[in-house]
Image (cartoon, rainbow, N blue to C red; front, side, top):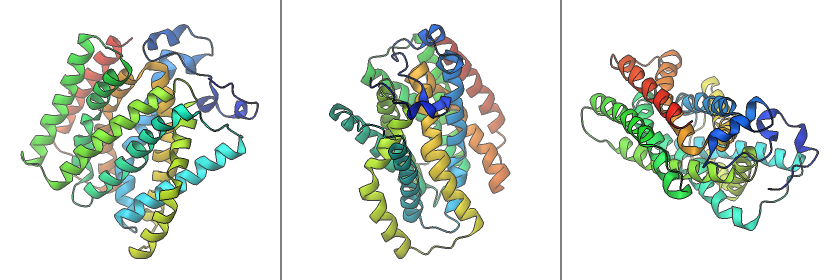
Length: 323
């Protein structure tokens, strides 16, 4: 790993730590030097902060759609996040990644920078936030499966049992809420699951050899040739109204979900491993349900509290099994 230069050392603890231990032995982080943020608990805390940030993505998207079209919402959020990321890289004089890292960064860019935001924004044109959030609750199992295939990490049977159990709770809840039929929005969401899981897995792997914030920053910068002209075209072809909700939604999507959230998420995955971190996302749909009620005034399904209990039990088991 490249040693961090003196300017990088001035960053906050979330973005300045040296390369974490390999994902094949996340528990070793407890004995690693560097304090709380290098420990298993610290890594879990960072990943949890990422989950909280992601749980606000769908409500933020609904707010953004109050004044922007779907394409301008995606393009503008990507452009703003890329400008922030590029500014950080320039200010800290971060060296360009090695040639071998660029294919992985391209997967991150295609999955979590472009693919997931675009597909979920298209889905939210016809789907409620609460329904979309629960469908995306299958993301943890998808991510864990791809990580096992890509990195060779093999969690225990107990881990997989709890992970499948959590996914089953989410799936049953989804079917019950949708009446048993898949809509066009559901197809968008299922496609979003696959590309996002691939981006998470590759980003978690790269975060073992470079700081997590640089992973997402370079992925965002990689998309500038698309996001800049895309934003210009989208805002001139789609009607735009700069309402308070629309501006707040786009700003949150760009700063919170697209940059800061992914920053702490990748760092957390690097410390505790992709499979274990991914299961924390079982709580994301339930958090989004809370936000959808409080921020959007949507109705909370009666089955949600039962699903929440089941999911939290599964999270506890996966975290214990992966230690």
